[in-house]
Image (cartoon, rainbow, N blue to C red; front, side, top):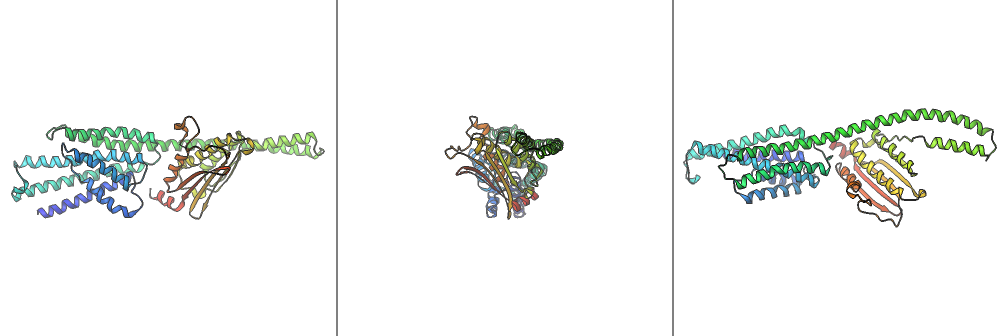
Length: 437
């Protein structure tokens, strides 16, 4: 009977390890190399089943370092996301394991007034002890099943849209849980009743931080959708105004053509009419049809900005294959690249101001290129030439983060008299990833 319970205990431990790995994977995904998944499962199960007793500093620190090293090696994502995973899940695992082990031990000794070496106990007491231990592992597994069912929808809402400051807010709140669980287990004696409520509070606090991160992500996405709707409304209102202006230009063109037909070549009236026509036509907004409505609006706004600054702006964009990109990521990629190009072009003589945007599908890759002229003797900083580097120095890095979410690559480099930002995104892989998500 004891051997059967030991086998069940073993199965419960490995099942618990798999469930914990699945929870971590939902928060920060495993690396794509599937050869790493088996050792990841083994190490994750070892950590998940660690039991830390009171005043056990080596295991407290060892478990923390083990989880940090495991997440660093086997999971993908930014360093801030990995730090958050450590701060969220370490206190929960330590608290749950401590509670289950301590409660099972207290229950056994409360029912059986025994002492001494367990190897000297009679078979009946060993059976009871093993049964209580197995039951505590079952309760622990059921707890994590319930936690997984509760947190699954929130874990799925947490995306890479959070900024560094947002992640730091979550981390600061989570730090309270890790400090509390570390302090209460190490410094307080085993019989102190306050250990239980503090462990429970640490669990609730850590899970609450997951909800907070999911809520912030939802708020960011809602704000993005609201901004998209506002831009669409402004876009179509501009179109209506331009249609009225086109009708006016058409009427004036007829009058100007009648005048031109009656004038001698190179006359002052002819030149004045030509200039008037040119000015009216140049004020007409160019509308791009890229195959993506959101990108059309971005190019419209940036081309108008470039024209106001006397910058030649040319776009040859076919973006029907870019439907897998989220509007926020399209705005990050094109908005930052074009803002940088406009800023660099302003420093040049008007004759050198030129921005070119190209995008098209090449085989199974989506290729984007943004080019602007530059001086050969111009110093190219790593981030920004502006004084406020904190606010303005992350254009390229933000593009890289957005591109990395889709398994792509961003290359930003000077080439002779041009500065080029080139982005390559795998279409099929990105579409399948979005479908799974």
